[in-house]
Length: 330
Image 1 (tube, rainbow, N blue to C red):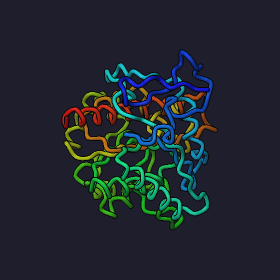
Image 2 (image 1 turned 90 degrees about the vertical axis):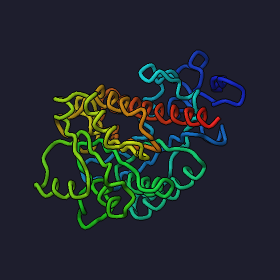
Image 3 (image 1 turned 90 degrees about the horizontal axis):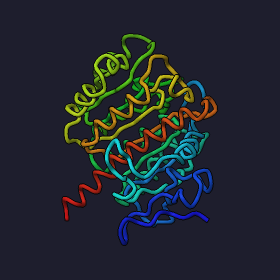
Image 4 (image 1 turned 180 degrees about the vertical axis):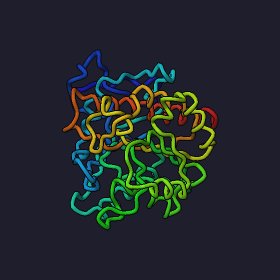
């Protein structure tokens, strides 16, 4: 038997399993030991996995990322001092399980993810999606834009992911944001990459990316300028637009996140990533994804621990904004 914490008030959110009654290593591994969606009926933030990695160009294994993040999230606690918030008391957050997609047909998988995301967003919830490879960002953005119109995008990654095709395939983990620009689902006045580094195929990669409207903050920029200045620049670019954040865990240096499919030297530290996200707490975050955790290449759960804390910061931001919106409308 597991025991969830008593809600803060009658009819309030159901929180994580009480760790003073059930050891953290016991019971099913939902994200942060939160209730399943079927246990609460409805939710404000749905944490959902997409076990899909058929779009990768190098090392596979991200299909196992979502569950690795859930396992690593057992040690998360209900109060977030960095944001001075108890996210699971401010809004209902629940684990919505996985979207089961076809591993042999990328086009069908993309359609399945979009349909499932439509259902979740239509319920009024925001999404915190655990990948899976970065291919899934495209259907998620389609769904978010269906609800909010073209959205600002903040993309944390070592790579641009605005390439055209691989082996003639339009849908891969290196192409989602070019497709999204082509489809008109992004607000091209508010697009930013953060953490870009490493070799490219040619200068044209950067030229094409710039033409699409992306600004680039390299990992070296973060090191030289610091997280506060970078966060300020991003806030100014995003403004009050609806924001989608997409995080490839390879934005972190392999010293902090070895468990990923396309590692590049010279990346962000986990501390830098978390601090930049905290600096975006007042942006209008409508949904987010965290992808490319490949646990077979991980050591001591380093990558999945970093990923679980990253998802925790994102869910905290969404929960705070949901609670503030309710208070403002009361």
